Length: 341
View 1: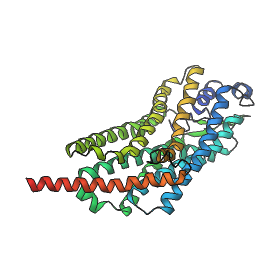
View 2 (view 1 turned 180 degrees about the vertical axis):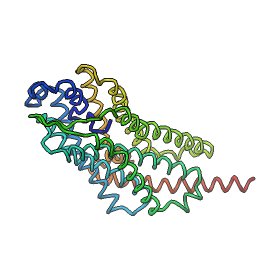
View 3 (view 1 turned 60 degrees about the vertical axis):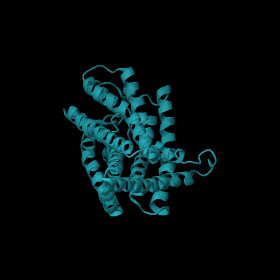
View 4 (view 1 turned 180 degrees about the horizontal axis):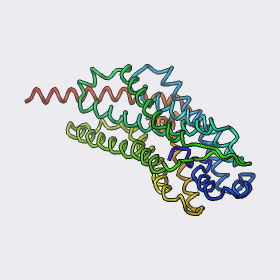
């Protein structure tokens, strides 16, 4: 399901309700106010995600885009921050929808928010895959990486990743629709293509990226151990945290998404509805966590907590320098091995 299938506005639940209770009054479908505890908590979390996401990702964009020297690593992290920032910028529409239990922004924005939120999911995971492959190539083929890793090529790869993300985000937007009842609802009208949409999202948004990242990590760990570079694994902590956090945030959403396919035709289940809310909230929380992971990974966290922007810059800059060190060490060791042979 696209990121807005259950993202805070009860889209999947509303779709079930619309298909089974078309003739019921809008009062039955939508209480006039967000009164229940789950709804209030969801709104609060949305506001927090919006404020922290805009602030944190905005800081990363400013630092990596304007303050730091352009490099391959800053290109990756700038793209990741842009993806999260765009997603967070659409949250006010979702928050308004939760509070009012009604969509007032028209069909275009209904489709557009679905497109943007799905774009965030795909672009984030694709960039994390690119980072993993880049690290693997840097360690496995240090000489080639030193000659071929350029900012221009990295930028081209990012553009291709965003292009693929845009293509995969079209179907969720296409099947987005609104009702014409007294209370307008923005929901998913899959027209019999629900399983196809879920299959595509699970395959390209989770399964293939997971297998790719797992393979890269296996190769990376094997190479580091073979070269006795275990002490040089610290530069990969940021990458590891980003990837682990992404999968922790998105795995419950993907599981509920698959289970949701079989929910159509059944009566409304409050427990399942709660699962949709929780998994969607956790998935969207990933969009504001990345900048704080940069900061917390800085060496001097305990000593310089007051300098949040400096931490983000130092963490990313350390990642860049360490990548070059890892390349140099691997290259040196490979040369020694070839000489001894």
